[in-house]
Length: 161
Length: 324
Image (cartoon, rainbow over all chains, first blue to last red; front, top):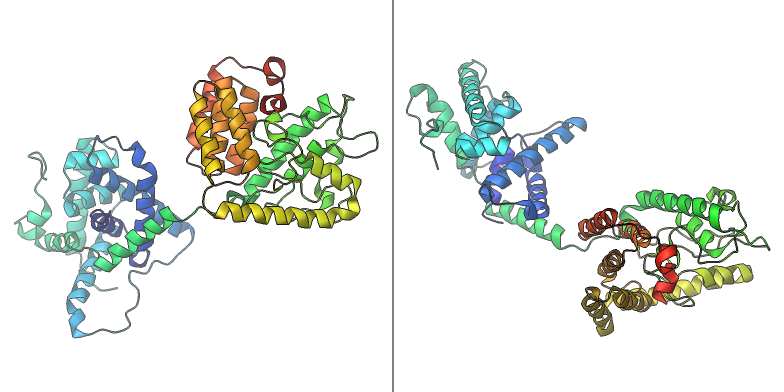
């Protein structure tokens, strides 16, 4: 299971699960995987199948958080900040910036973009995971790219929250 | 990983306008969780998978109360057609008392909440504890022999606390799928209502003894009975049912009670006793909520639906004759 946790973690994070919820939602994903493992037919790779489950769990989680009217906070507050944490700080800022950009995408475009660009899956796998025709997956990817490029060039895109 | 038809990924793009987005994506792709976080997830999953399931009655008490209410409603419907619930001296028939107690909600039931008036019969068939709509539940294939008063009379999760002061309600009457029918317990309580508290204490002692036995190692005879039943299941389901009955009598809360109850359903399905099968399956679903064996029980029910329906009463007699 350890080999699957990193990409599930990344997919969940890219799909908008807050940092402090990631361990719990990741656990939920693997519990679903365990429960449904008997249904895995081997038509796709195990990674593709697990990514599909992670997408649905993330979607459920976001829906629940919305219904609970939770205020999602990106990160837990830091207790201390030292020079040794500069790298982590930089990574966190990049993560937050990408998160804000991805938040501006519709969910279907976001799924395709994350799986193709971050998880580097093949487009036919992406189409299988999100359950759409291959051509639709392509169009969603291009639409997402256009939206993100426009958002990056917008003047307020680099403003820290 | 890239198909020839796939577009170039932004992380690999050399175009100037893709540079910033590509850099963000490269960072995101390399942003792995810390080993401690991975370990936390793995430990959490393993803990949840390996943790013993809490008692279904404790987790799903309200739902089971609804199921019990439905069962009691069925009992009332059938008993109103077949047998009187009240004897000549006015005492409720034990099986009806058991159904009423099973229908009692877990938390806030009071004696007044039990619809005893609705349990009264409309016809005058001869009274007897064996009559009822769910023979397998009330005195049937899943039950221990009559007179086994030592069997615990409440499910593992302690569904409902005993109601004190109820004039026509015995102290402990609900029972698990595999426990003995409480006919004699109920009769005793009616005969000597003053002794109800001591009877309840004795029942609690029995229950504690059973729990202590269940908490320890699995007794050899428990496994032997199940193995015998499993071996006989294919060729002689009736014999298997007898072994399972013996298991239910000896180990009502044994380690393999869930498997036993599933085997009972299997045996009933093989015997074509669809009425008893439906009752046993309903009881299984109520007692073992979330069981991994539930799909198997559903398959038995599907098989019974597709097969010609046999009536318990007309073909093979009531379940009590099956297990005696």
